[in-house]
Structures are given as C-alpha cells and as structure tokens.
Image (cartoon, rainbow, N blue to C red; front, side, top):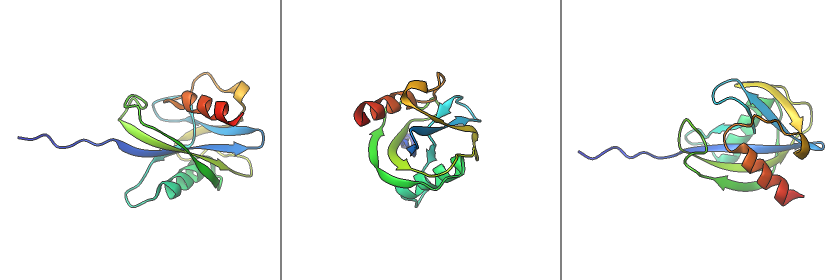
Length: 133
C-alpha cells in the first residue's frame, strides 16, 4: 500500500514598515515569541490577499504591498509543520492593535528587536535589514 503524499503548507508573512520601524506581533499560541504578521493561505486565496487578510487580522491595519521579498522553505523553519512562506514588504499608517492570535503588537527598529523571535523570523529580518540598509 502506497503512503498518502504529504505536502508542505503554504504561508505568508509580512514586514510592515511603519514610521522608522517594522511591526511585529507577540504570539498568543505556540510557538511563543514575537513574529511578523502572517499565517496560512486559504484554499482559493492568492498570496497577496492572504497577506493582506493576515495583517488586518493580527494588527488591525490595512497594508499597502510594496513588493514580494523572498520565499523561505527550510523544513525546520516552523516546529509544527513543514511550511513554505512567501515574505512581503508593505507599508501601513496608524497604530497597530493586536488581534486574532496576537497578544501584543509593537514597532521595532533594527537595533531594538526582541530577544524572543519565533520561527526563522530573526533570520528573515536580518536579511531584510542587510538588504535594505
């Protein structure tokens, strides 16, 4: 009997540029830590619509997409599942308000990132800051 095929989960994350920093959310659910807003893409949903939806659910902000940044696919990037995440860069106006599975939301600069960052988001943010500045 042949095993059922297993496929990675498709996710999106967004680096939201706000003022002089970027917006991160503190996760309510495991794995703990601060993270870029994001989540799973629903069936029939484009990456762009998924990232707008996730940003709105987790920060309360409507984002304006600037560009697609990079895709990260290390099978160990998420301890729960094998995920492939497409990262976007966006801008937003206003103050983020934590919602959905976000316990807190805050604006951080390259020099004041929190110590406890979930998933591979620290590496993604380092890649972003190293290419941006």
